[in-house]
Amino acid sequence: MSVAVKVRANASPVSKQRLRLWIRILRAARAIEAEVRERLRVGFDITLPQFDVMAALERKPDGMTMTELSRFLMVSNGNVTGIVDRLVADRLVARQPGPEDRRAIVVRLTPKGASQFANMARAHEGWIDSLLSEFDVAEAEAVIRHLDGLSRRVRNGGMKQ
Image (cartoon, rainbow, N blue to C red; front, side, top):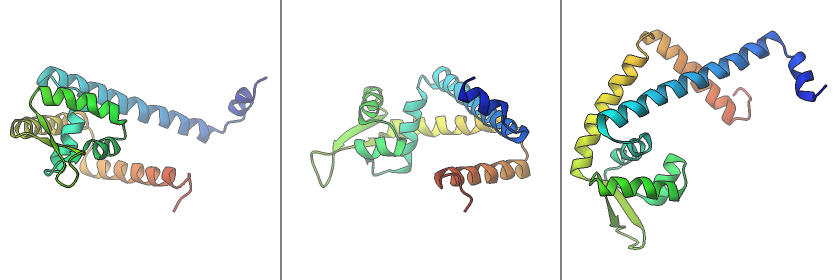
């Protein structure tokens, strides 16, 4: 008998329930993400990673370096470069030399990109509102509180603060 089987055979009902909870959280997040990806593709001919880059840049009107973008989005510089290349080709973002260090490249939304992102962001908010419409304000706040607590515990090595 393998160790994994022994652990599973000895798992408590609450342990199994928590595992089911984790799987449901993951499934729900993946389902929402897939729906948003499809709606962005069909409605705006843009990918979710491109939307994420534009969202990051919208928060920073003075722009971000490629390194700042990759850190913010938690992806490699190479991934960001490919995404930015497509956005530049579509004239939604522009690259410029950095003001302090001409070797650093700063990426900013163009006026066209800012306008299109505003439309996408409104649509995105509406989609999420519709997809989560089963939650009233109190339920949404309770779930947010629980998930925030879970995130803090995970970052703290699984310990309550």
